Length: 453
Image 1: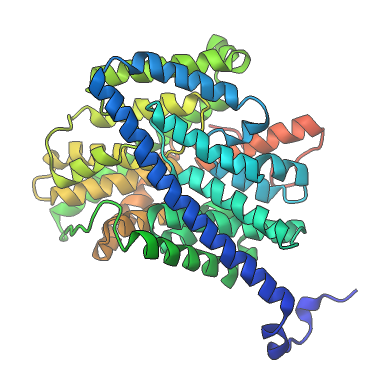
Image 2: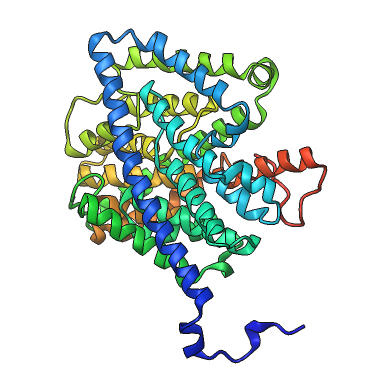
């Protein structure tokens, strides 16, 4: 049997190929739908959190009732068919791509009802004050939309569906942050792993179309506004080392904490989470509400507003914000409810940068805050290229590339002292291990879960 990839190709024939144009049409339509879904998601999350803020305006004690009850409802709703909607959503995409021949598994993780449930339930989580983000869930929703559309166009072979899932996830992160380059880097560094050979112009096209739609509907904007930060050579570069070390250690500790809680919490707590997940989620919600009362209500939601205030130099955010938000992110993710960690991680990083800046009088405070955001995000995700590109595109400051890259690389290195396996990969391996345990099929060589160290 001949391998068609080695045969001569008629460029004119390929250009006019109906199958190729059908594939392009599916990708383009899918990218448009993903961008629209990301915009709806963004507007919906703003609306839901504003309603929660209005609730706080009536009484800051309401979260002591609303947040635990909301967490319990979310845990209950994700017990059955919507179990795949838990957490960030990025591990689900990675796991579905890695087990591409398992159509039932892919359907459990990326089916359109699961993607729709992920969007709705994440919005509900924001409505009750959870410290979660929408960017990871947008990746999940984007992959689900793209796979569903591909099947409707008649693409049902596993390899094609994996490519569509990767393209949908990349378009999702690009549209969520309005950062097309970050979408490409994220797909290559995080989603693809060992699947780089599957990439072609298809992924670039999907990201480009999604970016164009997002730009056309919401305009050319930077996530945290257009900023200019400078970091001359000399003593100021101590900021790169300081933020890289602190951000990496804090990010690695966060990753290790939520991995241990969600995949192997020892003792009575572990048994409680496994056998009484609804009660455990309610307790997590109560802890978040108590933390909110103690912190002046700054730990709820994505943390976007607080990060923007820190960057702008407002003094309403206390020096304890980074620690409080770190704990809020941990208990929210530990509850097992839908929601991502990107935006909350940027908020923690901004707080860490603000804490480090006074110790570095020769460095621009804004520059130190940006470095803290980048280093902490790299520490959490262990994806330094993606973290650097996101932070550069978020602020529209491309002249700051070298310090950000250096801080991200240092952050990634120090993160591994606490967490050897990148967080999304570790969660994906846990999903694969659960799937293999339920089916009695051993893992393929090279895909066996690594020990969470």
